[in-house]
Picture 1 (tube, rainbow, N blue to C red):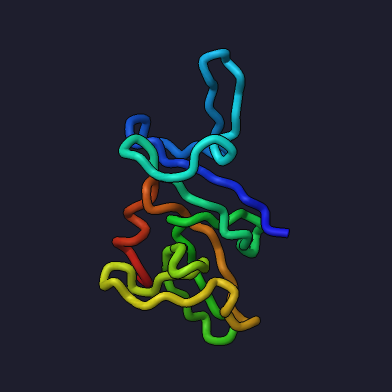
Picture 2 (cartoon, rainbow, N blue to C red):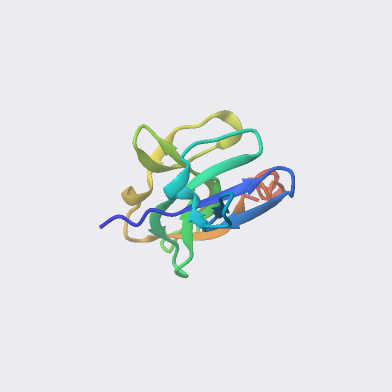
Length: 129
């Protein structure tokens, strides 16, 4: 069964919040994914892809990943996106490149989570160096 989790980027605090919750007027706590689903100008919502990297770290929309091959020591930096109903990795994000399903990688390729597009933008500047 698919596990549904969210994280949010708080624009005002400039920080990532995992498993966010809110309180109502009576101080009752609610998980945000039970209470509200969407985006607004204060928060950017990201959903868990149900995929983990080689180290067991969960991958969310907006994560920056390193995909590398054991065969020829090749690697590339990509971004996890949700596109047309599935989670994909976006190749060549600076050129609006094409994307491929996360679960389509051959068995000799591995994924490593190296950051996200909000806290680690410099990782995209040094792409494939």
